[in-house]
Length: 255
Image 1 (cartoon, one colour):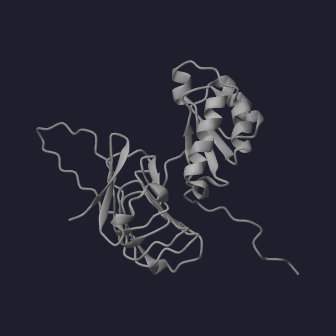
Image 2: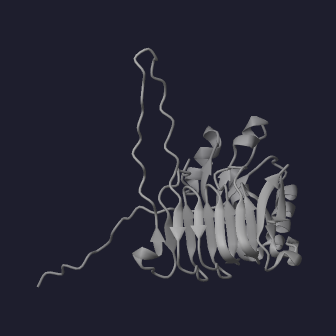
Image 3: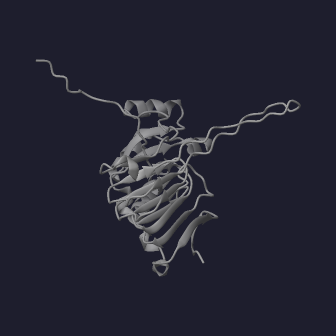
């Protein structure tokens, strides 16, 4: 009797991983700063995959033993999963360690990772068709890209779930501790925000986080973040917005 059960399956997915940008080849300074960052948000960085970005380092013409930095990261609890911006020698070292080169791709559709959810729990408006009107006397120019659609979530986000949106992310219910929500644009939570919230994940410094009650473990915009220890508990039970100003996160009550 033939076994008709599937053997394996490939599916498209969105994978979020922190990116480590190196500006120095001083291993002692790197290790010290890593420990400081981990101590600020141990749960966020625990067993975290990591992509190593060497572009800034190579702009400064600083040599780096890639095998050494990979060992350092593993020793501090990270798991290097890729490299970008490396030179020929660094890429060769990465391949020798079975690490992919230039693995960072554009993040696509929204995804929930964790407990299975009903399809109706996420409502994503359909993309609007693009209409371009060109006058006869005007030479057509490049067509601007269509903005990414916002994602609307109506159900509570439970611990262990991760949600990603390539546009804005709008959540009408609470976000529990241990959950993680991410968006390339703004994040709106019309309820209590616990867990971790990361807006502008592709470097959009104009992104903001809005919520009715900020009790998050971590909030981040374009890579700059604050942990629960840095949040002002006086903002509890009040609507606030979080935005970036001169590489500092500002948390301000919404009047």
